[in-house]
Image (cartoon, rainbow, N blue to C red; front, side, top):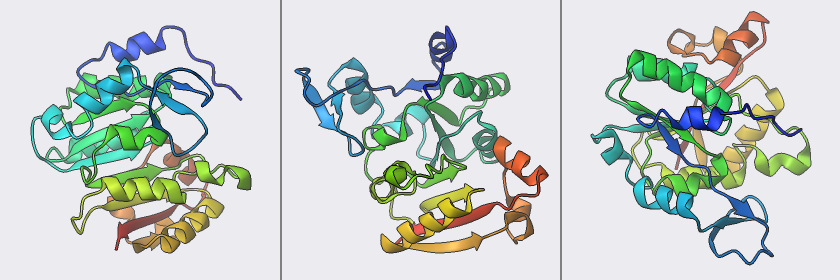
Length: 248
């Protein structure tokens, strides 16, 4: 079902120019005569060679340390929602730079407002799509990727859209650096998605640490930072699945 956009939400979001990066890229069908700059890995459409693309690739890709003004580690949350998780981490870890990637502008605004009110300097909000990860970051630029409670895309025909599918995993591998601590931290309430993720990662040469099939009862629970969704699931007594994955 198509998501209804709130009138004026785009303008409001982009008004927070100190925090928000516009990563929206236009796309057209492959039979279009529009000049293109690169093909996406996830569908039959092309990325238009427009000003937005040029802005991202020239001014942000590989430039995040300059944007933050330091060489601290860079952690990205893919699908940050209202930003509770990543905002909490940014407050707890001022020596780490955080990037919140989210497509829904009306929920991203909530996170931006929280950060603006608290004047947090080590976080940026990237308004864009996970499919364009290649364009947002240079190879080996990232230290950690968080994926929390993403859409499980339960139908088999949509499995490539899952954020832990093979194509996404290859993107993450390219963008993570070679430090031993660099990897993916993944949480979900969906058992089938968790099992799918374990299989995809295992088959694509990732190794695991700190796997939990019920996070609340695990050793990691005391240091766990929750999302808005996670708190609701826990109140209902639902198990939370968690893993860390690192490249070989």
